[in-house]
Length: 297
Image (cartoon, rainbow, N blue to C red; front, side, top):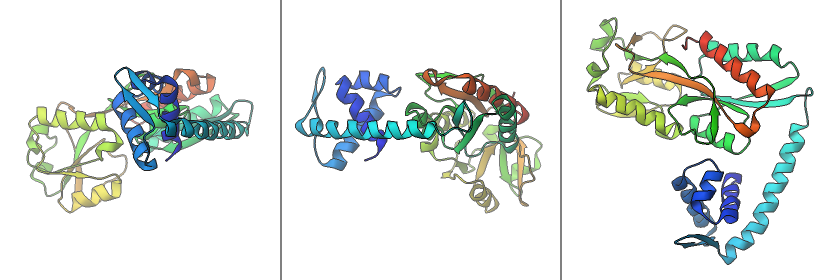
C-alpha cells in the first residue's frame, strides 16, 4: 500500500462514484478501478460495496478512511514544510524529463532557465511518461517534459516539437549499406523498443505505424538502457529506432534515416493548470529552447 493508493481510495470515498473520482484525479476509470481492487486484495478486505449507481463504503472502508485521511494530511504538511526550505523567494521547481533526453537539449533547458529565475532551485528527475503523469497528478512535479501521444486530459501543454527518428542497425545488416531505409524494408527484423509500461500510448502508436508501413517485427525485445540496447544490436538481436546520435556509435552499429520520416519524437512540456506560475512559465520557455537546440523543430 502506497500513498497513491491511499489518495485514490480517499477520493473515491468522497465521490462514491468511479467516474467522478476518475475525473477528479485526471485519470481514466479502468486504472482507478484496478488500483482499488489491488488495494482491497493487498488488505484482504472489501472496501466498497459496488452498486449500479455508484459505490458505498464498507465497514472496513470507513475504518481505513479515518486512518488514510490522517496519513495524507501529515504527508501534505511535510511536503509544504519542505517547499518552504527555499533558496530564494520563488522556491523549488520540480521538473522531469524522459530517461533518454538528448544531452544538448537538457543542458540548454537548465542554462536557459537559470538566469530567468535565479532564486529558484531546479530539481530535475529522470522519469518515464507514466511516472511523470502520475507525479504531476499527485502534485509531486511542477512541469514534465513528455513524449506524445499520451492521455493529457486535465493538463495544459506547451508547444509540440518534433524530431525525426532513424533506425540503428548492426553494420552487417543488409540495409546498413543504404543511405536511408524504408520502414517497410525492415520486415522480418526483430525490433528493440522500450517496455510498453513506460509509455503505453506512444508504444502502441509506434507499432501501428510499423504495421501500416509493412514492417512486422519477427520478435519484439524490450530494453530501457542505451548500453543494453546497443549490445543487443551489436549481437545481431534486432534493430532500434532513435534520433540521429550526437556522439559516435559503438563500432559495429550504424544509424540510418528513415525515408519519409514516419517516426518521430514529439515532445512538449506538460503541467497542471493549478500549478502554473511565473517559474513554470520560465521553465516551459526553457524547454522550447532546449528542444530546438537538440534538433527538434
